[in-house]
Image (cartoon, rainbow, N blue to C red):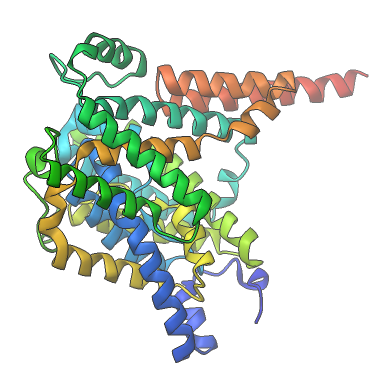
Length: 425
């Protein structure tokens, strides 16, 4: 079987290529098992990311189902799993806080159109040239921001007003709310985080996130703990997808949302191609980057039309898919089908899930996202360290675009200075 190098330039979904090469019952069985494994991981994670992003947990599931299906069906990678990602929590929550859920839908559609256009114009290769120090800097910055965003639900804190978006004001508000700490919520959240890490260490093939959230839900329900749940905040999860809906737009709204849409596009392109590259390194295959970007764009548009949020390729779920024995994009398609089945059958049970348990899960996500070893190694070179710290600092205290702009700007200056120095010497 060819590894895909000679066809990496094609605008043809890998699903079509796989089926044309020959696909048997044995392949389907392996894909079905991999899809089920990924769906079990994606179920609690999608809800947790949605809650942390300021939307309902159902919207996270809509994103994983619709976006995940389209990414696998149309994408340029055999193994990519699409869905809501922790990296988008900061951007989505800021957009919802400023423009509401309607504004988020328009932003995701705009971003989807931009991603598809970037892929259609074969610009995917330029995204790959963003310096490594910038990538590590904004990834670590997002991890810190995600952790800060989970403190309220993790500890069951009650704020006097709305929770601030920026990290420093957020921490100040949370410190003032410290006397309202809920010991039961904190115990559940930390227990979930500890259980996930222990299962990952001792039984890495087990769905630790699902086990931990289910255990916390059972403890909370049986002991009648005074903690906030999905049901108490959101009223539960519907059974099935809503009807597609085209969001209302106006020229003024499009202009106001353009900076957010650009941020979504840049982060979505980076995350998706990075995830596809990780899949390539694990399998020895080569993805079609421009086809992948077109598919990511279409998946974002589809997700928004069904009430979902931003979609991107997800490294952890993609790696799980490969380790579970996936053979083709059919595994990703089936992962979306299994999630839809879970939603139809078990939606009422989600009402009992404590929000502290989802916060504990995202604490683990933030810990895993932070590239600690890479961060420390980059500090050994002063130029890389300057780019890294500028990107990291501005991502934390301001926003993602400011961090990336500063980091890339510094990297270009250092590159130009180095070229000039070599010419003069």
